[in-house]
Picture 1 (cartoon, one colour):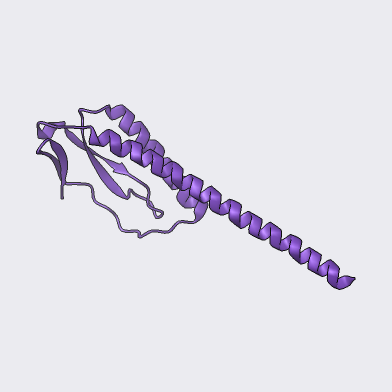
Picture 2 (cartoon, rainbow, N blue to C red):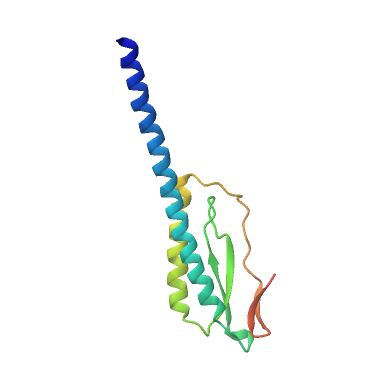
Length: 129
């Protein structure tokens, strides 16, 4: 009788453990899907930008490394809705910071320098390092 009781306890415990793992993975995948969806929106917005001179180009820090600081810099033309871009990027950066903390993400801790300047080349803003 004692063996059956122990086996029953083990089955219940394993069900709980595997059930939590599955839910956790789904949660992480959902969070990642949300980040990727927002990233696509940002990239589409930037892709619509065009420039005719260097003064119409700018950049913004994008992403959040687990150690802090941006993952990259996005270069864009001010021909787009810059305020909307800034809002979307701020949201993305905050979500990625939260994602990194929630899921224990690690990254390199190298500091990424912003572009030294941005130039309009063939109608597209381009970073110069």
